[in-house]
Length: 115
Length: 112
Image (tube, rainbow over all chains, first blue to last red; front, side, top):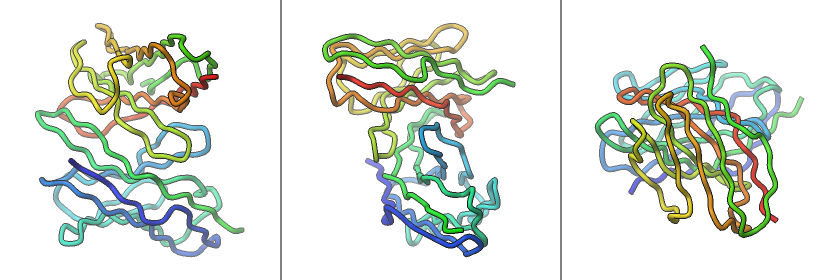
């Protein structure tokens, strides 16, 4: 069965600083990987996704993530954090077949931003 | 193009009661998935519907059931509510064969 580990429960960064959120996955085949963001009491917004091809993927709001198969990782990065980035971030792996799949999420990393 | 909409946004139920949550898929999407997100946790997959049939199920008991309608909207039904069913319930729609899912804002269910 697939699984996702987000080692950091809570991260605090200063506005303008760089950010890296860690994600490790376990899945037997080539994974579909996602990062979602959730503001308090809200649903999930897709930041970016990896299906195949270029291992560095660009997303919305200036985020990027790099797929490293050898490390089973898909870390999320942003060069300069804005106060509006404060939220909870979830990494997910999509598993299934025939065009149908289910997402398995990590427990999330809460990001706080100091002005 | 409308997004995924869920109703109601909040509700409170008593233990032992039954509840129905509703989801309207994004236009053009034919697959609906439901997730349960307990406080402080990541979402957990409940089940998925495609062409009005269940197409995958997570580790949830049979008292969690669903429906998908011809217009691709969906319902999640939970019978015999337990206190641990208190959570944010998220609906996600997608196009079968295309792998990204779009989520609604969720329904916050509180069981007392």
